[in-house]
Length: 467
Image (cartoon, rainbow, N blue to C red):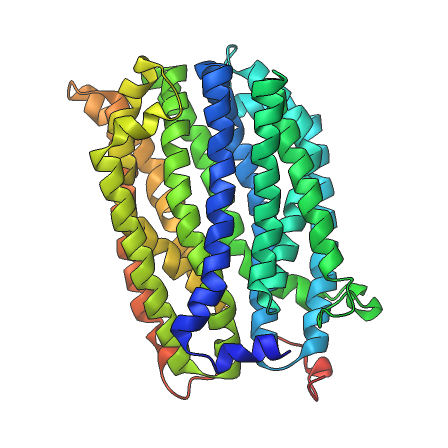
């Protein structure tokens, strides 16, 4: 418990470094192993293999969305209730989050096998790429159950006062994935199946190690018999907070499916492959920002629950400053050295030629993307799910879906390039999303004011002495 109580006593800068650095390292290493998949496939298999893997990205995003639905919701709630010193409630969150993980994992894996080809075609697979995408998904789907479990448990490990241990568990799985990529793809020549096996084995290992943490006697939050009793109010609270990252990832998958269709329409399979590479670079930056926000989450949630609003303001402000700095650096790299970045993934000059303008258009507004993400993550950390949902979905649903069809169409009608219109659409929506996020932040300034009290989401019959 001493580890958790430091969240209300240590200086905010020290705490953010203590919690964010392990989370950032985890996210960066996870991004690196996603990049390594594409590098190995591009160098040892070919450009169409990259395109085939890009087709699976929306499906992988949905899986990550399921992990976020439970993991982010559970870890955010655990931070808040630990701020109220309620350990028994935290144990119930642990047990009930595992029940949700089992349910959603089974639902997704079984559904994926039943509708495999239909799903891949919906996400833009062509006759040339569906074989690669199918081969990858047939192997990786069972491992996705362990992926969702890993997301949930490592988030709870971090929320319960073990940020460095959470890092080592996830980073260890990512490093194992990189090693197995090299072995299976470049040494054994298994192609895209090697990438799938590397992911499945590493996620299984990560999940087992994470489960072991909550079995050990020295962990102050552990699996207890009472924690496995289903509690509808815990399900509701976890899912309500987790709905923001879930809908964001789910919407991203749906948007990528539509985007892939537009890319095929205006640029063909190689445009999809170029977007996959460019999106990987953008995802690397976003994961860095998300890692920083994951470090903010237990600090913000705990102090919100404890009523320390001055510390809440301090951690939000510091996190925002660092996020914006990362966004500026990423945008400058994309603008100055796009060819060098693309060359790391492929030697196809045609794909690189398509990817250079995409790299610039999709990343020039990265500071605004960082601003929007930080706002969304902050509000889900302090149990403001509807604000988080609107903030996270504005760019992808409210703006991107309609404009994706409008802007390219009018550019073609004006004698321009439809593919450029797709890239311009993404840039435009980054700006609009940030403007809405700023307006929502201003509307919620009361949470930083002295004396503001966080509401308790718990049935009256269970309210009582803290245990």
